[in-house]
Length: 222
Image 1 (cartoon, rainbow, N blue to C red):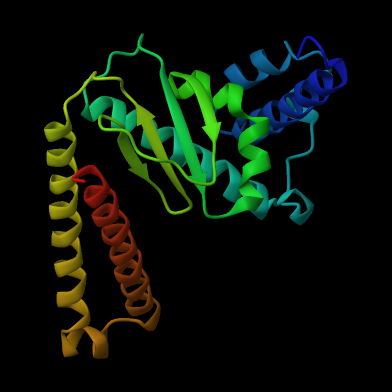
Image 2 (image 1 turned 60 degrees about the vertical axis):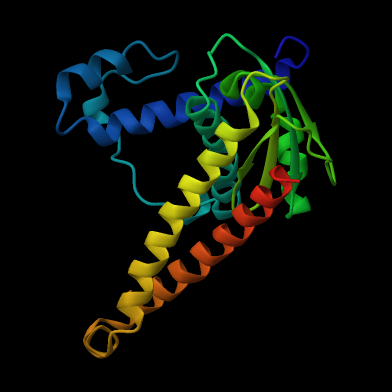
């Protein structure tokens, strides 16, 4: 934040507010350590015991921001997972090309690209509308993104195809399990409606993931 002191101060204030209220919430069950930390805060009262206990405030519910953070977390997890499965050492920085179905997310990713690169061990994160996959690229697929990691011969094509086939096998097994439940009259009749709807949503999600993975596998086999 060297070039933006206002942004730095805002973020520090937010973090301090969250920390202070977290300490107040924890104080009844962890009195000594919370008091000790509380006294180290830049602004504090005589003792945390005299502070008002935090109450739920609907103004602090940020549903849209939560979805954005979850999306970015899933994106980073996807890249880390790809690196782990392909035995890529943490000190090797990769380039990534990302395609987003939801263009509204793009600004948030662009604004946080440096943080994403640091957490996902990327040399560069490129945002594109389409991408021509190279021979040894590996593909990660999420609910609202597709990401390609350029490996430059760090793995072979066959190992990546094998990984995708194993993932397809896992998804297919999950699909069969969900299908068995939904085709069982006893389950439909006796299970609570919300549980049945949850299984139907799960079925739809798995089908979409299988479709995306089959598409990525077909690209790899060209």
